[in-house]
Image (cartoon, rainbow, N blue to C red):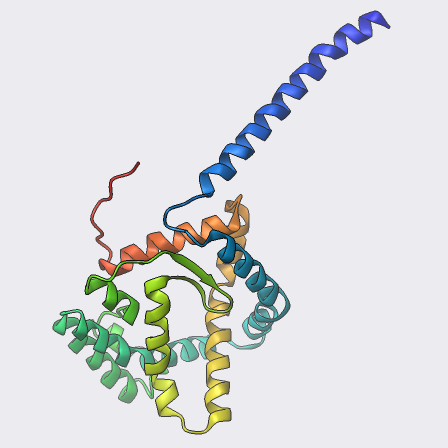
Length: 244
C-alpha cells in the first residue's frame, strides 16, 4: 500500500498542477476580455447578447434554416440580388456624402442597369458589366466626417454596433427605400421579414465556424465586428494602429 501511495502521489500532484495551470489560463483569458476600452458597456452588452442568442435559437435561426431548405438556390440568389439592388440607392447617396462622387455615380448606374436589364434587380447584370458593388451606410459616413466610435454596443436583432453606428443605423432605417417605396404596411412588413430571414440564412455557414473557433463567442463577434467595421470605413485599407 505504501508503494502504491508513493506511485499515486506524483501523478496526483501533476494533475493538480495541470489543473492549476488551466485555471490560471482561464482567469487570465477572462481578464484579457474584461475592461476592454472599446467595450465600456460590456455588462449591458453581454446581457443583450444573451437575449439575442435566445431569440436566434427559438425564432430567427429556425426560420432561416427552413427558408434555406425550402427555397431553391436561384430564388434565394434573386431575393438577395433584389434587396442588394434596392440598397444601391442609399449606398450611392452615402458615397456622395463621403466625397466619393465616382463611386456614388457607379452605384446609381448599378441601380439603373439592374432595375431594367436585370429585371427589377433579380439579376446582378451590373457586376458582370464591371460596376463594383459597394457597401456603405450612414455610420460609415459619420466616421468619414470625423465622428468617433463612441464605444461598442450589442443590440438584440440588429446585433453589433458602436454608439456612432447605432445612430447611423437609425438614419439608415429611416431612409430605407423599402420604407418609402411600399405604402401598404402588411406588404412592407412582410418585405422586411423576407429580407431579415434571407440575411440570416446567408449567415448560417458562419455559425459553425464561430462555434468552433470561439472560446468566448461574445468577444469573438465583438472583435470581428470592430475589425471589419474599421476596414469598411477605410474602404479596405485602414491605417495601422499602435498596439499596447
